View 1 (spheres, rainbow, N blue to C red):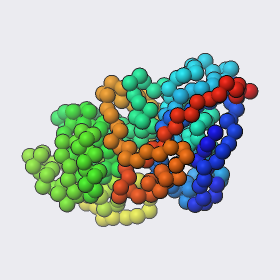
View 2: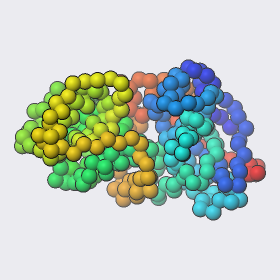
View 3: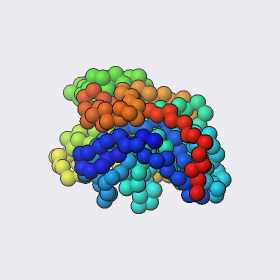
View 4: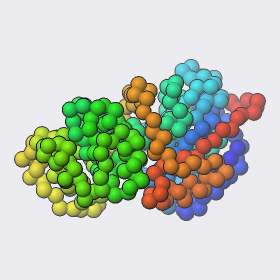
Amino acid sequence: MKALTFMAKDTAQIEELAVPTIAADEVLVAARSVGVCHSDIELLEGRYIIPFRFPIIPGHEWSGEIVRVGSDVRDFAVGDRVVGECVLGEDHFGFTISGAVAEFFVAKSAWLHRLPDGVSFTNGALVEPFSVAYYALMKAGNVNASDVVVVLGAGPIGLAVVAVASSLGATVIAAEPSESRRAAAIQLGAKHSTAPDGIDALLAEISGGRGADVVVEASGRPEVMARALEFAAFRGRVAYIGIDVGREAPARLGLIQSKELRITGSIGSPGVWPETLRFLAATGIDLSPLVTHRFSIETALGALDAARNPATTIKAHIEMAAVLDGTDHTR
């Protein structure tokens, strides 16, 4: 089988490897679609947030199909379409243990969730970033059709926030410098989009001068994180989802008190994957506008190059269609 392997810092290659064997409590998954995340690039550059070792196969945003089942596995069967969580206690799938950018890979059934009927493999591979957006909005609380929601930053997670908020009926404004990402926000349900310098006037017009009922900061830029307080309405909610550690920006902190703001921060999507999948299936959201570039496993190095260029790439996916031979790979 073929796999993308990070051999050492800044060194990646397509390897030919044996199909892995599985233990009694494991399943063998045939990868179908795998997204490349900025954190994968950080891993390749040797600067992931927790210790790891090369060589490592990346891939934590994935969908696949079970092709072998261990003898102790009772809740999954061959042919099941699945997605999997990536934070597994102290281990991180695709970072500290090898991930899904391989034609076949091993997973424990405890990590997995069935992909609902009607949800494509492409959408399945976007469940991980989508769940992060869903979790942030659920923490913000009671987002509905009465709300004006401003999303600051239209990266993959910011765009997923647009999709969640608009499906809940909110009037969504996306603020983003990139014209192509603003267009993607409209495709995903935003009623309005604007470059950052136009947000004040547009928000005043749309909200009747009230401000945003919910502001979601998804850029991770300190100066934008500070300004998020200014866009919020009286008793508005401000949800911080963009990440920055160590940089600073001046902020009008008195607005927290004078506007009686509710502020939440979130990281990851702990405990919400089952309801995220139900939400995705029930709403019929199509996340495919996020995928701007597609590659095969043979050309997977190109997906890394694409992911390094956010000016032209929102999300690069590596797509596979390998079929397992008749060999018994259980042990």
